[in-house]
Length: 144
Image (tube, rainbow, N blue to C red; front, side, top):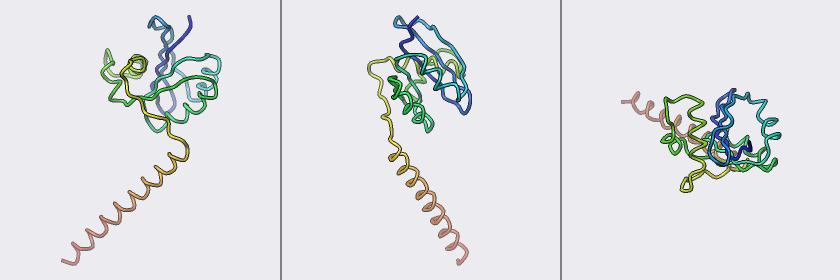
């Protein structure tokens, strides 16, 4: 029972994991807390991990590279066609596991810490511009 591909549905505290072997048969369905993730993957061995691209997906990917584990992030809209049943965390993990093995899937590249920092600066600046613009609009209305 060698796990070759894992799909993870990320959440705030509890993650759903779905793993398949080289034949595509499901051999692992598990719930893990955030603190258990590193220990679990350190004992697992090399495999391919699929995640949905989001803000918290980069954190785990950086630590898995040190363990020799490949990870790929796909857009949530790319994995949604593979959901077979109602939308819940376990079905999402299974769909991600299926989507990451497709040869024509497009993946989101890993952002470095510096890239994430620059993006947060741009988001903060955009918020300031929006606030200033709305303030200017309200000032012109009050003078009419």
